[in-house]
Each structure stands twice: as structure tokens, then as C-alpha cells.
Length: 414
Image (cartoon, rainbow, N blue to C red; front, side, top):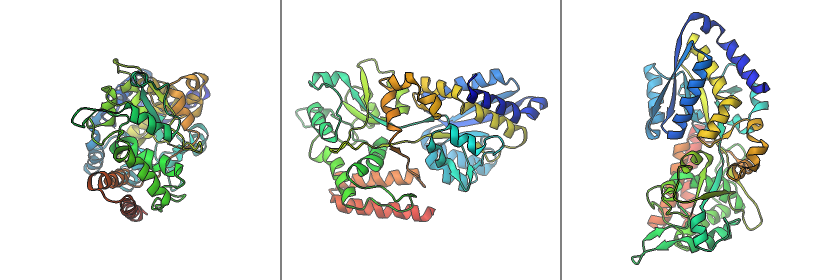
């Protein structure tokens, strides 16, 4: 047996020894609604309950837009979940709000976590305590429509930012009224473009988004202005795409109306349902000097602050299972997100896979933003781009205003 599976099994048996003898226990698992995630968790719950007949796991889901609010409200009402999923960037809010509890060091030793998971798991650590473990990790890649590329006479995906611009111009189409019927690339700051801008483009233009501990904004600089100018030029100078085309970038790509889009591994499950064309995946384009960068992130599973007694022991056992290599393989197959343990992710099979390989390569040079208010910080970048594209605010002014607004968010949190 794989030693990690053995560890998870021994841990699970240990933490639930008393619960098993006490009779049936029901716990609740909460996550937001995303079809493939819900399907994957349904499978994992079925597997877990088959191995643990004394435990019932009830999955409760909410729309993404309401999820954080519902979790916080439930905690205040005293009826929160036993185990819940959260974006790593929400950790401070959930810890400060008393929504989640630190993981038991007996059940989840620090040395086990730090030796068996990708290093980005440390983003869940606060004051010496881990507050959650991921099932999967995510990075970004360029998705491209092979059919549209072939029709445009382009051999393959762009390898550099310069090639991206050239290819995007060839792939964009407009009707007689000047309206896009097909975009060369999606422009979607509300999607993953804010991550691409923050941790990729800023670095490729010679800057950094923050200082080393992510407490000071650093993009109010020549590099920050240059990266932002390049991004907005995709719309204003090169005519590659426009904001709001078909509402969402991923929807435009699925419809075959966008030749390229930047998205994460979590999109693989839904894109596999596309039947009208073949798509491919490539590493994010490098700059003129060959520099590549990427953004790595994850959703973690944590234990609710209200879990105690038999429910806590059952919750620990369930968390051990959903963060095991066995569960990670299910998640990879159904959702498309990469296993959070290197041993499970960096297999010969995965590294040779044309879809998984670009994402795995990216983990070697990716950065993980230490958000204090993920939604607020994302909104700052969205507002910045809107001011430039919709209000024609000079780029340097928009960047300076964004930097000041984000610094205020960081200062309030720190």
C-alpha cells in the first residue's frame, strides 16, 4: 500500500476510535456550487461512507456569490458546517471570524503536512497552526481553439507575448458594424486575468506586485504601468478583444467564439464537455527574454469552529480522507485540478499528458498571492481596468489609484 494511503488510513482509524464505538455520527460538508466539484465530492462521500458505515456525510452547497456570507452567518447562528471548503485567500477572514479551527497537531502533524504537500500549503498557516489542507492545486495556462488556429493558418499556440498579440489580431473578427463576432483572446479581469496581470505580467515587465511578505504594494512603478498598458492595449491598440464579450471569458471560449483564454486547471472538467471543436493547453507566453511566471492557488478543506466531540473526530477522519492521494486521483479525473501532493501529481503519466503537463510545469515557477481580502483585491484590479477602458483614465493615474486603494486594504488587515 502507498505509504500516504497507509498514513491516512491509520490516522482515520485513530481519530475516530471513540466515535465508531459510540454509534452513528452525521457531519455536514459545505462547498459552493460548481458542477464538477459537487460531482467529485459526491463520489468521495460515497467512498468514505462505504469504508466508514458509522459516519454519514451530508453535502450542502450554495451559490458562489453567497457562499462566504452564508458560512459566516451560519457560524454566528451556531449551526455551521463540520468540514468546509474555502479558498486559501479567505483564510484570514475565516480565522478572524472564528469560522474555522486550527488543525490538531496530533491528527495532522506539521512535519507530515510540510513534507507531503506542495509548499504552497503554507498559505494556510497562521501563528504556527495550519487551518486547512487542499485536495488539489491550481495553476494557469493558455487554452486555445485548435479549429480557429487552423483556419487562421497558425501552426500552434503563441510562445511569447509578442506572438500572442500577433496571433490574436489574426484571430479576431468583426461584423460590418464593427462588433466582435469572434475575439482573438478573452479580456476578463473578473475571471483569471487579474491573476495573470498580478503575478505574471507585472513580473515579466520587470516589477513585482508586492514586497516579500505581501504587506506593501509595489506595482505603482514604471513596470506596473508598462504591464497595465500592455494589457489594455490588447483592447485599445490591437483590437484583439473586448470586455464583457458574451459576459464571461469561459462562456465565449466554450461557444467557439474566443480563440484563446487564460484559465485554471479547475476549468478542465467543464471544457471537456465541448464537442464542437478540439482545444489545447499551453504554458502562459514568455516575455521577450524568455521569462515565464504563473500563479498557483488552491481551495482547502477546513474544520468548522463548532465541530467538537464525536463530530470533530468524524470531521478529522473525513478531512484526512479527502486530502489523501486516493481522493486526489478522483478530483483530478472529475474536476481536472492537480493533486496537492507532489508524489500524486508528478507522475510520469501526468507529466507526459499534453493537457496536464503545462499546468505542472507552471508549478515550478508559480507565485501564490497572500491575499488578505481576495474579493476586495480582485475588485481593485477590475476597477483599475474599467477606469482605463471605459473612462479613458491615463494608465499611470489608474495604476497609482489602484495601488493606493489596495494598500489601504492591506493596512487595515495588518
